[in-house]
Length: 64
Image 1 (cartoon, rainbow, N blue to C red):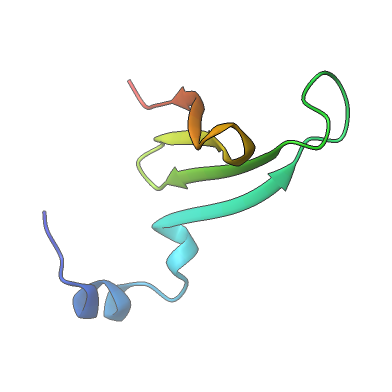
Image 2: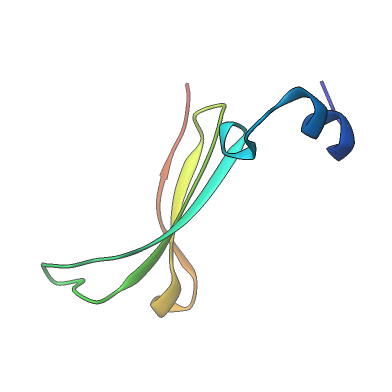
């Protein structure tokens, strides 16, 4: 089912219920100081992007 942006805004109070992006920084281990973008959506699909490694996708999780 495809919703236009206006329809999506009407149906949800908080957009984070549909998708969310957060920037994190690794605090310990070999990746110390590395910045990650953590992306996820309501369907259970998520991935991490390593900002300081040329925006490589470092991990992917998904609903089966």
